Amino acid sequence: MKTQPVTHARASKHQAPSLVRLLGAWMAWVLLGGQTSSAQPTQPLRSDDRLRQFMEQVRPQSSASEAASPESASRAARETAVLPARLQERAELLQAGEAALARLDVSVALDAFERAMVIVHAADTEIALVRAYMQSGHYRRALAFGAHTAGLHLDVIGGSMLYAWLLNVGGQLALAERLVAASELRMPGHPLVLAVKDQLRSGQPVASGPLLAPPTRLAPYGDAKALPVNARVTGSAVLLQSGTDALMPLSLLPGSGKLWLRNGLGQLVRARIDKKFGDPRLALVRLDSPLPSPEDLLVAPGEAVAGSVGFVAEYVSTPDAAPAWPVLRTGFLGGDKGNPDERLLGIDMPAGPRGGPVFDGHGRFAGLALQGASKTSGGTASADDRLIAVSQLRKALRGTTAGEPLTVQDMPSPSGPKPRDLIEKIYESSLKISLQVITAP
Image (cartoon, rainbow, N blue to C red; front, side, top):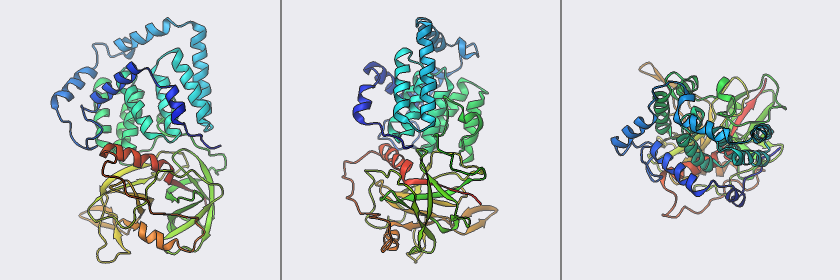
């Protein structure tokens, strides 16, 4: 079952009261060290005083128990003022919302969570709403409400860890690590904090075990009924604008022919080889049913300039076929070494099969990342990854049955999104355009 996007009209009816929104925005500003949305995502804090103030604010109380914190006491007071029948209704709404989210019925899930929020303004409901926004593909909305939840409910560590995870997968690792460090000061030795810290350090974050337990589930739900037990995620692919075709590294094409593709919203489809493709390094595959493609995605008119800012979105390969959100990485695009068909990706990436979409500094789709020949220098292994530029893809797609892919769009205006807004927009597109490649022997 496909997700149903949340319309702006619907969202506006369920916005938090203006005072709560302002408080959440202020807390998010404090959490991020006073940075505004126009700041670079990896810039240090502008003021050490702001960081010290935040550290003081989140420093553990004299009692190590979460239940003894002022925030917990306040929450308990609010809940005791609610009739038991209403609390039971709230619990049933949360359960129903989680079940709806698990079957990818986002509209029903949102309705249940929002009704539960009316009964008690609590962290577990807000965390569930953040995940529902992610499941519907609204990363920017999820990130904003995640900041509110993390800042307002300092006694509930799940809100901070979900916000840190969303920052990290959205290409803002420095901010994610800063938030995790502050949370560790607040609750030393907390297993959830330690688990998230380890995953962020690994460079290839995978949510498993306790990181998948609601309400703080650090991954989307996804349909897996059609998958065999030995299926696994082997890499990434790129959904074309038609929504019915995708490009992927030829090396990932399974000899068994058992191939599925799944986006960051958890939507899974079977895929099959279409026909011989114009580039021997890539495979063009046809989806059994269409997946939603980003409506506002821009496509670069030509190759990005070497040394310019670039972004890559890809999925972490895993020994199972669990759904996940893609991870966005930032760097500087490489040159062609004198051969336009052999351009270096240039962006530092962990070892992996690649296959994800590449974006330029304007947020436009600029090509596909391809794994290069492994090299070893000074005992350190690195990959000579390549960039298949959009101009090469457009040329290779001529004569295929891929609809109308890679249509050039107008450049953004000079008054376009600020740096952080741009990254968030790119990631929101990545939830649809980047696909997990799932194969089975």
